[in-house]
Length: 125
Image (cartoon, rainbow, N blue to C red; front, side):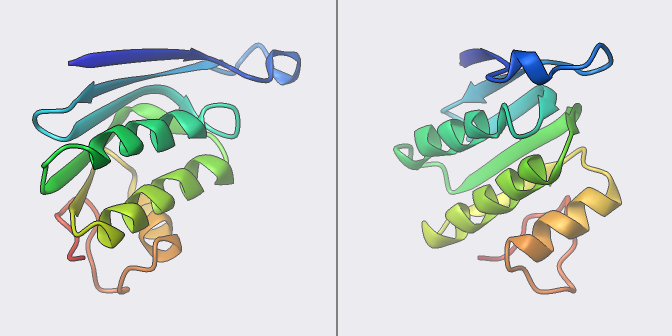
């Protein structure tokens, strides 16, 4: 397992109630990424980097677990959608765990999924 921790790239913009960091726990054997912290403009590139690492594996399914993460803004939401699209382009299945129903729907819509697809289940690609 590889664990990557990231501090916010924009510390001057941080507010006291913000969680200024995100960590990604990446398992290259199972294709699982667990995000802990705040996924937003300052940290969205960490999810992109984790997906890039998954591209060099033979994992047929990618699991992104956001149970312990907060999607802080539209950049974080877009990062989830981009991960979903990248999975599809590379013939991988994408599973989003722990997201609220609102985040699930928005990520799938941004990712180009059919409206009837249910987030939290393996989405067809």
